[in-house]
Length: 534
Image 1 (tube, one colour):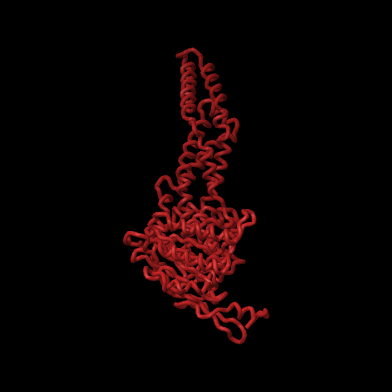
Image 2 (cartoon, rainbow, N blue to C red):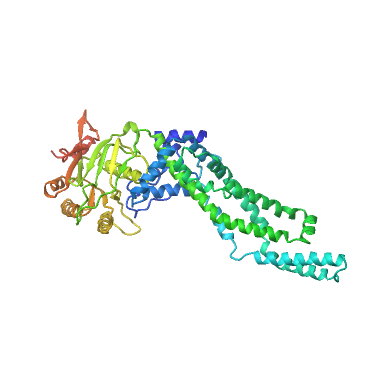
């Protein structure tokens, strides 16, 4: 519990060295925004939120953050669940604590636990055939054997029971291979389920009177007669029955009259089939809770963050235009991965009259950070989490970014060609006949070529985007592109600026309307002692 609280403090302070590392997979460069927006990776949004102990819970959270087909009804449902869980801090902490104990780790999230291995193990060992026919055959032979013994004892029939006994014994020996692994499998299964016991029992025994959303998720644990503790008790009874083999003499005596091991191995077979159906439901509810708890913990640790209003767009007029209600309106929008003492929040809005924002400004003024600020908060909004804003209203968008393009030595791609391929993929995304429009975030468009060709290509590309069902931001150093606001309907200018104070550059990181009136490249060179012609 101390570890849990210390990690929560680290998340508040953005102290990455004290946070669990979690998923260390490399971000997919082909994803529309995963790498550009730092959704996954060493200092990422996923790592900041992720409090799951199981790998599956962690991956579920990641899939929500990376989803690029937002569903308004699903978003609202998740928001309701996260808001409900936000107020249950003890439940969240205790579930994480019990999950960590179940994983066998000495500390919280030293390494995430692949709990789905048990499901694979059970499903792999569920027999395609059945012991039922063998059990019935042995039961009939055993019954005949006992009957012949009784009849012979009362001299009502000839003593043929030895023949029946030999047949019964022969069938039992011949079919022994069918149950050879039953005892070992039972011990493994019982040992594995005991690891889940603390988590499952907590979820099935907790009261949900004032938590309707939580009760719905945990309904698999509340199914009378099929909840985890009942199944574990059945397993324990089977273990006691099959444990008869530990007493060799008693085992021989019992099996002389009853096919004990075969019958209880068949019961084990039925229980494994039942668990193969129940366990995935239990685990799925657990993983869902872990992912939701991660977002609820994020909301709890950041009480100033708000839940956004995500509203569906109404069908607009025919053609490549956005509907009248499609918008992005944010007040005091900030980046959740920037420490509070260094963070500057801005207001921003896109609508049908201002759907393409040309963002200009000097080097280091904050253009790239603002692009990521918009994208990261939309990812949070579409996952169902709170956002770093005073208020946020948005329609569903398919996010597509072109920010951290890099060349590839292995693939033989230059920087410029890699950028062209990325921008082509963005354009292709706008051509797909989907109801959800694309929101693009482009940083320094065509920076990999000369200024003349960059300007010509940028104008044509922005013109093409503005004519489609899209909205977005383009950050650029090309001040000539600000003229597009006078030429293309729906294009607007925004900028960041700086000033020189006592021989050093000072940035306020406040977003302003209009084109940037200043540049600072030559000033930076002068300040660093490089030769600059006046």
